[in-house]
Image (cartoon, rainbow, N blue to C red; front, top):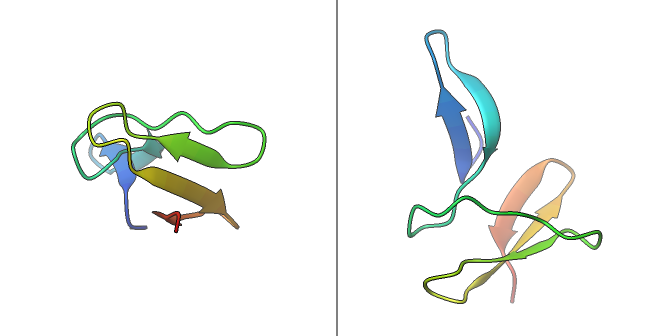
Length: 53
């Protein structure tokens, strides 16, 4: 299971991505999302999410 993956069901299926604060991430066309609580940025690249620095 990838880092920050939002998984549901049994067997589990990925339906999206979550921030470290538990908010669903919505990525823009450039692959960047911002957590509404912490304001940290995340990057989606090659189906992997990481904190954007």
